[in-house]
Length: 451
Image (tube, rainbow, N blue to C red; front, side):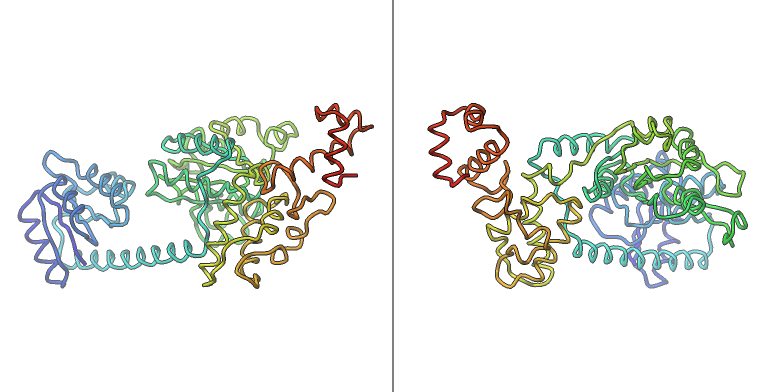
């Protein structure tokens, strides 16, 4: 490893440097946090050994700065005055471990082994993140839809604050992706983002999942265990489908939000947790409150910053963008060269309602890319519900004609006239509603073959 030592005592710097080099690692020593941060900017290090007291500098503040700028580099604190309080504070700010002065070569050796294991684990995490990125299409945060632009604007303005955020929207609209985007733009981005899926467990197991439990607190609790709140301490807790949270657990969540306190199942000791909460649901929480299925006080506590992720069918101008992005991604993933969609296939995509929203679109495009027999996706490559246009409402391109779709003005006009004629009592009424005379309506109907 390449190790950076930051300590204002020359004897400590020299002896630590010699001890590290004797273990076949490279070491470099500086006498201040300012110079240390500069060296981290100039060179790559695998480990930082940092003194708690650096003359006029506070080592804990230097630790915070290093963790903020270089979150993947482990930091071990040196301290001549070890105490529970300093250890807890150092750990809270992100230190891997702390070492009390004076330390023996054996203690330093064990610490270096720990740091190497940590580095190996970090490398594996980076590799896994790379694999996941290759398997998952990137979410588009650029939008031509005004409602979507407003949603992103509110989310990203609230992201740097500690405010609780409630994200509403149908299933598959990207609520969990939005929660991750908020976390990554927050002041705790280097801390964990921990997700709890509220409908996935029974009441008892969900409470344990959230707050933890002690041995024997319920059947199957064979040992003490911390919950997701503890894991998320200092970071973000994302509660997915919060509308399904059982009423019995809701007061405990309210206490966490209001007082930053909680208790484990079977444990009467109160614990503190500094977590930023983001919640999401596809339910109408206001109605759930009216129906007595959700606590009103919890609803108002969650409803600090609320946004709604619009459905895909309400974003026709973004639909084609996502579809093309997915084609490009999946074609590259399986090594195919596709030029995109045929006109008919794109029309089918734009006429479909997409009840499963982005999740359904993603799956449909992945299937189409795999099954496509030519260099473009055609209607028969799409799932049956998507690729089979409704003949009663189709224009010349083969899909439902609607504003914002890939249709000509003539097709839009033809469909509009057809619908007005069908919905009015007479041609006179239809012509009046369209704002044209009956002779013009007659000519247009004849030209467009409208019955």
